[in-house]
Length: 497
Ligand code: TNX
Image (cartoon, rainbow, N blue to C red; front, top):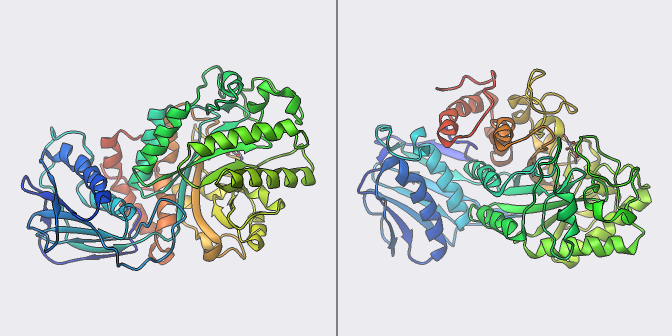
């Protein structure tokens, strides 16, 4: 019932492992880095079971009876260097007597803990042990697991509608459960500026006060942002900030009308249509502004990436656009980050460390000669803001209806002619927020399509089958209900009660 399906899972004969009041969680004595992952496991298991589950150091030898052991194995081979977060490979062996979780790095142990969590009955997601769920059994199994792609992301648009720190944490919790490792925050757009820039207080003072539909904006202080970055990092998820430019900059330009080269003068904007705003690339003051923004955000971003947007610029010439992206790339690099941009940035000369995020066409393949890698976010497949069906109330429809099966039944390495496994960093599911007024609505659109995309990114293509996925997915609904996560009960799935 594990999602995403592990690369290799072999059920074993014999008696299940039973969690009990005498179970101890053991961590190898040589690594302090394992302790927080053991604590994450204990915090997951203690409330629903009511067991004490102490964590203790062990210095070697076989795992004591009744024990769950988390350890690092320095000598396991490295399959591929990760782009984000750390090495995620792990091995899990459950027998009647013990549970052994081994990984090369803490990130792998954390991913393995999510598998362990999903192997328990769904009651393991309960907040307390008031409801007796029976015995806490784990099936005997041998799992060897690793991700297909290094980049498995989710994007949340906090500009069109603002989401609080607490709401974003709830979204991060979902990412963690399904082994996603990137949270991309779309922090600015025509409708709202959402991040404090200390040297430019006008950005939030003027740009954060509205959202789509009216006066209900908000923004993150730098402390809020750092808190989100830490919350994500604790779950081995990398936070990627996006400041969209040179288009989608109406909110940014409210305090700088002299830097506006768009079709209309900047003014508070609460509707949906875009493409009218642009920063003037020829004005030097534009670059002072961009530098201040990139510098401050880079300084509070632990991850190695900065996303400059770059999509849907309708009011600059191709030359102006390319020159803009190249200069932005220099600034991002100077502040120690790797640039990411939407697919249109292929029009500029790219550095090999740059990532290009595909969304609507095949044009991202033009980035391959630069050595740049591609993140696949095809709107027709993985845009979580598209309607599930014509009758779905929430969501947009410009890329078509996107059923659960649509998000699942495709192979990233066969999506764009000429773009193969080696060119692909991974997949990412964006959730644009034009129609999403609160986190409950966000969950409705994300669930169950986000777990589906998570499996596309993690599981080997040859091990993925819709019929099998559909059955496993059905069994996750009771977990979501215990976790308080809203979801769309798609008729494609025979949901378990
Ligand atoms: C296109 S995807 C956009 C966004 C919208 C989205 C709605 C992309 C790079 N640009 O500005 O929110 O469609 O689906």
